[in-house]
Length: 268
Image 1 (tube, helix red, strand yellow):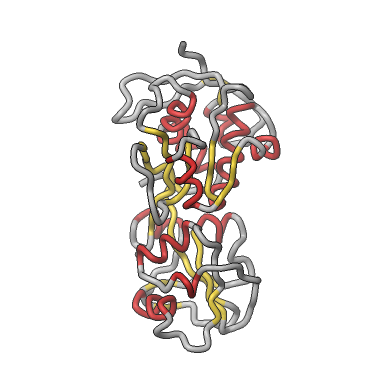
Image 2 (image 1 turned 135 degrees about the vertical axis):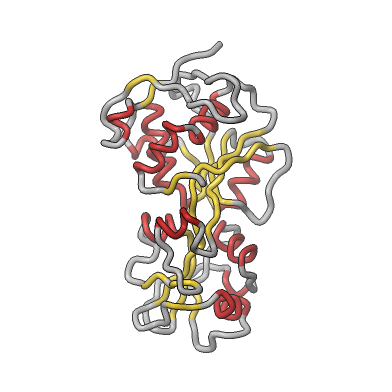
């Protein structure tokens, strides 16, 4: 049975999480009818999200359930990107939100919900203007002598993106890393986690091929390493299931406006 989604009104959407109204997901090209669902503690789907999407999905859970962000966070399982997609593939997650992983499960429907990018940052006094070729040499171990790479955890989406977009020696860039500063330090991550979540605080973002990674250059495609934050559900998820309703809402006009209100970039 179809039910009604309780969401923020359009005016309150940009102001925060204080007021609620009635909204159903906006129609998309693949959607014949708007799905309606009332989310409760019992009906909210099992959502897994990559850590770069943590602030966003905390807020989404909060507005769907009419709670605060801390309570919303308790309803989301956060993990490395590869584990998020693996959980969807084995049926443990009903909805997955993460960048593309090193391996994607079969039998899923995935769609972009936000634009993001792989970005790089250096310590004070480091070279903050590098070419794609220089970055490939640094992260493959064929250049950048004396540079200390800030590694990322195994299975992280940023490692998968680095491997996919410019190539790297995964043994060189994967592992636990401690924060370091200085002109000989270089790190990498997603724009959303570096800028919105503070991963690159205290560092300088690197311009690549002369293009600074900004919201405008990433959205326009001018920045060379733009990519998508994806949402995925099982291809077998029913049209009136809570997970598919939420999946469609994230793609629709109201969902995209909310994503933008949280500082994330709307899908291309």
